[in-house]
Image (cartoon, rainbow, N blue to C red; front, top):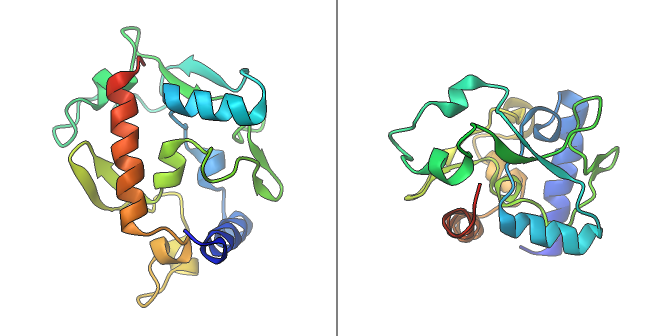
Length: 169
């Protein structure tokens, strides 16, 4: 992704935050062991994640489209490794001007959003946390507004699942 595309994505996310609560404020962000290593090296701290049960119990219902997801992401006690949140619910890395982590350090699930995916591949776009009506148009879908192309997303998806298969929840 070019610097221009990244700036476009950052600008879109900043605009999103003026319209509604963002994914950084509403979503529980799963982190792989690889994410933890990358973030630790960048942030020079390790107190940014915790193991917690999902807020939405629906998360623990097996998904026929992605049958290994729970095995890869949840421990036997039903908890999973997620980024910590501040008292107001924001992601620990969210500041007024956006995420403090560079794109190449952000958790893979953050990089992938708004793509929907399974272990088998990209399945579409899931813009639950994006105000797509305000930012996207028929001629310019949300993935373009954010500056994310399908090939980069596919690379991140493959890395995500490789890290999930190789790691422990």
